[in-house]
Image (cartoon, rainbow, N blue to C red; front, side, top):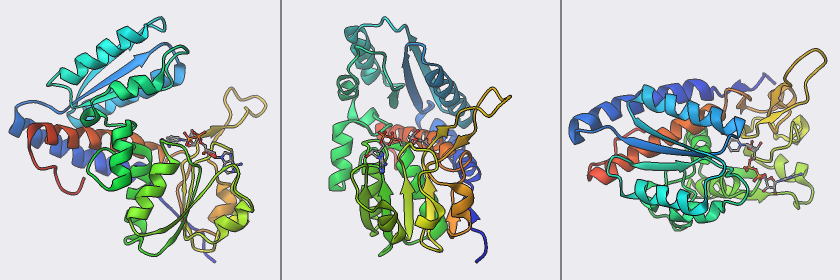
Length: 298
Ligand code: NAD
């Protein structure tokens, strides 16, 4: 069999960002303001600093106003909630994102619950989780929505396909399973207590791995021709003489490449989709707030 196609999430995300840029420019004409995203970062977490910087840069490039709020790790729950309330009321702000994890002592669920669900562009608020569960319009978490976009771009109609989602987190696994169900796939959610995981995965036409365990899914777990979406981002220990270890996914890429029909690489697969979908959700929020129809094809 020939080698699997490489699903180029980076190129797909770039094209999506270009469409968002064009739609944001049209929004500016129609609403006399840019769509706006507020990003709140509490504390000094190094990875979070990088993510927040990348989000602000992506906003700027797409013509979305970015309002950054960097608060010290000593910020109290009351101070953080006051800021969220202010952003909820701010008409320039369409989307609010509180970068997780929060420093110890701050209750993440309480902060997410304080965000106006109609500005919750991360889709983490229970109202949005509920809307997704019952099929109402809301906001869907960015990473699984990005995975769905890649799958539909690659496969087209997912009706009747067997999908196995490995992982049941609130931000990836569960919403992913719901999106696939809504797209008419037959969905199995596998997790840490699943028995005979390789056998379960072997029946899948679509595999979405969101576990956080380097190269756990082996090539011989994959049904020949299956489409594999690897959400995992894991850094291996550095090899001798190197400062940093390699980034790998949850799937043993080289092995899976021999068997799958198509697969996302790590990096360059799902990763770039997350920020692109965040911009997309912000743009959609702006249209809803302005009473305008959401742009098509985004
Ligand atoms: P999580 O730790 O919240 O959830 C992991 C899930 O994997 C759990 O539901 C657990 O039941 C399951 N699991 C753990 N061990 C297992 C095993 N041995 N067999 C089967 N299932 C097992 O993680 P998460 O937030 O969902 O993230 C998962 C991975 O995706 C991580 O590597 C994370 O870095 C990555 N991630 C990437 C992006 C992106 O933008 N690409 C976004 C979010 C998360």
